[in-house]
Image (cartoon, rainbow, N blue to C red):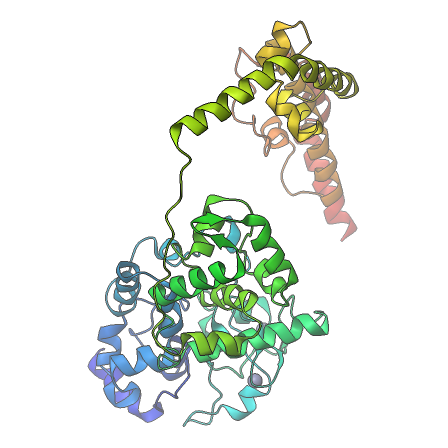
Length: 482
Ligand SMILES: [Zn+2]
Ligand SMILES: [Zn+2]
């Protein structure tokens, strides 16, 4: 901090409130002063140690802030030690690359966890800081939270601009402020059926408790794994060391927490990662996921609290019992014998079905045809076995077929783009390049080895391409209209 800044600060300063999110506190504190203390990103600010240690009279200690004004107490519960250290290090010291991956917040299944500068319209009337301005509560800003657990109502947000701290920091000076747009319930929270809303409220309340480091201290990475592992054994989801997917699916389907499981992106299926999750060898990485999963496996959250009140003992593991080699060899021989007696009959049975589907769907490839057949077909039919017995198998590696398909899809794409340009009165000229943009082959379709095969596409491009004159005229027309 420069000396001017330190001189100015106390004029406007009010201390941080317990439960106030550190980043928005700084935004509130520093709005009226020229500041170098403001981190750029509000969700996972880094390098906070030197900032906080320069204003101890306002924020107390670094430790106080971590416990009371960040999400760290809830987030770090789910992380193994080395990740926890990396995440805390990011907050205190320097930016940690790949932070979202460390937090399990990267990847296709994390879309549910949107971070919004959300606020509860009732809380902002009650939560006033020393300067008389309402502050942002940390539990309302945690990614994926949609309800205020205290007031049992959807969190609210202002307009896009007021939500974009990085671009318009002035619109985020405190939780009650907005540009005049007003506050609306966050998307997806307003129209929920009552029982789902009640679940969301319950989740918010539990997550708020998890933000308190003294709440169930045994519910940490190791404890969560043990708790889920032991419960899976009790429910028969894990039997010895064997994962019974159908039991897991049934338990989750019968649970009232099922909507939360689905919303938090936990997939309960027959897979290696689901097996690890229920055995407790892999731990769900977000506190919301933890609430959903543990909530679905116990009758009530109070049961989770009872189980986690004391240290959670390690789950005893029964080793897998393997059948002796001679028994396995016998079973293998029995399978071979059965196949030699019945294999041909079943092959014919499925191959006929395959042939019928192929005639009905000439555009489908081998894999797609196989998906139309009963599951057992895969035991008998392969591309090779079908070809060997003279059944026609679609082959799109055949260049003639390949170019035909490509020509069809690219020419349709071009025509679609042309319609789009006209409909939206696009400000760009419909050049050839612009017409093919967005197609997977856009960058190489004009390759001299490919283009000659694309007869329809060339015709479509010739027809759809917009000349400079036509473009000028279209733009002129628009100006005229307005
Ligand atoms: Zn509230
Ligand atoms: Zn606004």
